[in-house]
Image (cartoon, rainbow, N blue to C red):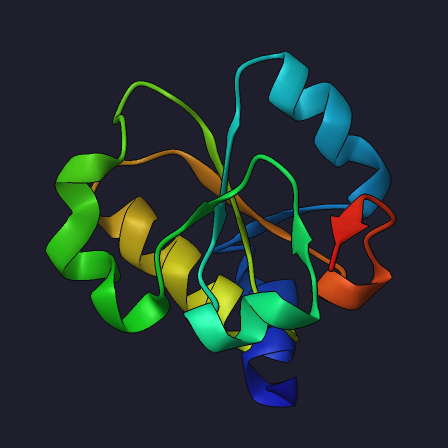
Length: 109
């Protein structure tokens, strides 16, 4: 994880957003996509997020609107980074949520 974070700091491949920016960005039309596995959602999730597990993302790209900006979230950050790279390589504008899901204040159990 540290290597990805360092590389991203140097190259800036994936833009990040802070947890306190999410509500405003969603109001502006961003789509929130949670790339965790369904079993992880029992520990909390962000209301309104679409769940597409990372291992299904490539097969489910057609479900995501290409004209809408996307914010990806995960448990720690690595899957969010990988998901953002996949989406950006497919021409989809995206950012990753910088903080872990449990730290986001609008979580629901």
